[in-house]
Picture (cartoon, rainbow, N blue to C red):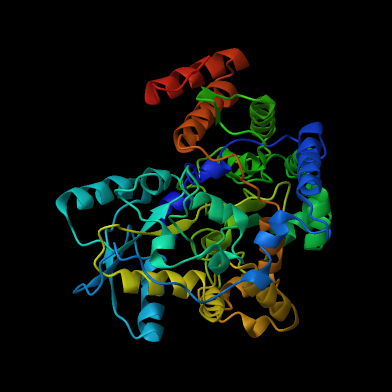
Length: 488
């Protein structure tokens, strides 16, 4: 997974998704009202037979692997079909499998840059008229391309219908759509996450022996805060429950119930202050490490007892986070980890495949997207071989069930061995079901989210400034970057 996927900025546009916030306790009024709202909505949308319109739309029985004709406005028969990304983390494996199975040939174009640099590089490629067929966009800046018809074409013009994506997780589908509701991008992955923790430290300081027990200890933000204090006190301040404020924010923000922008106005709701208070309390009481995500101290802390756990999503269970935190195979803490959902269901990262309207290889574009987002057999093979939690409810339910009875279902056993044989996809499957982004995504999320976290950490948590002063700093920063937004 690319680095941006792993940065605090992440999911912005998508994180858009992960952008606003949740309440400090899943059992508080905010969380309750969210659940009640969903219940009321379901009741309103119910049909005579007891099913809902949403259930019907996403019913796996409506799934079709047959795609339609390509629109005549798109060119075919080009000399070279290219798949472009900022690095090789995902694209290289996808292209290799595509070439082996499709009878077609894709060339991988590696821009070899950071994820946050890719957007401008793509724009330069468009301006220069470079060869660009399928290319990858990331949550934080995807809407720049999805909302612009110069950069992306609707997937319906490539022959795709709602039925092709009936088994996709709803939040990923929301992120791939333009502001007008046109599906422009499709993702092969669902980057659901959980809290991975050291089993030896959990037993020593919290007295828990199973992931189920750990979930009970940290199942709400109030529980998490209490557990963090217990760990810090029992260890004499040497062990923090959580890795970084960045990790906390990644998770907390996924529980938001309001969008950052409504009617072109910046929205600062009660959950903003709730997160700030949670962050400050954990920081002051040594419940969270006082270092930066992706900093030099971050991953080695998994071996030195400086932290008990990390918030990670599907791509983070390998060498990107947890494998490195354990010291790799044979490392100091390798095999001493388990995972549970934690205080809030969340996702971290994600990549969407989009198509250049000027492509001259529409047939290959269609086949590439179909292979990894529509064809269940290929999706399953990729999920198990990568391994990666993929964007298909039926496939993942099958894998979770199979792996529960036969761990060798996973082709790569390194992650499984690090987790003591735990079926971690089962935890991610539980987490992904709690993600809901409808009505919460805006084009400004990456900027706003980044500026909020910066202000909270520098002004409120570390600087000791008042909440009002912190929000004044935040608002000024947002207004400076988004001049058209109304900031009161």
